[in-house]
Image 1 (cartoon, helix red, strand yellow):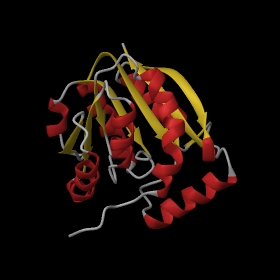
Image 2: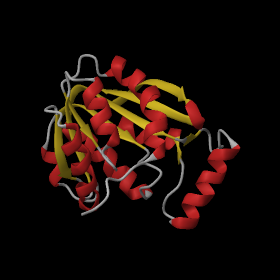
Image 3: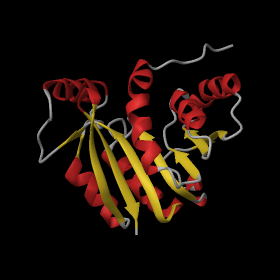
Image 4: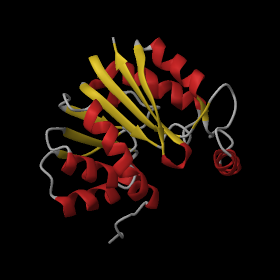
Length: 198
């Protein structure tokens, strides 16, 4: 029996993110969460936004932990996790009017970030919304000393990972007909980026 996983950062950032999602997802119905992690975000946002069908998804090793959070929450609108590895294409068969992802792009390698956006471009319906939360650099510069330290820590752990440049990420989005709607400052030197598919 595994212990239910817990992420302190999920607890700390969920309310500021929810404030954004209340606005951006007000008229949405079916959300794919890429990188559900522990499952904490899924059950929190699913409970607070009951009009949404919230599809959790992550690589298979995280599924057992996500299932524990889902089992405790017993929310009818939060769905069991899909197996989603951005390097695979099976997940691209789904169709959603919204995609959400938090703290994932700096964990992935750059080729995986490219595949993330290619996949989102396929699964997101016209007029669909993509909301991504995490740290970003601007014009090649860190926005804070803490983000610089975080980037060094990431690269020490995995040289392929790291805080991404906003301009490079936005170029990938634009290649999928995703037009930036908002770039919102968040606590702890993070951002929430909101795109709409044309």
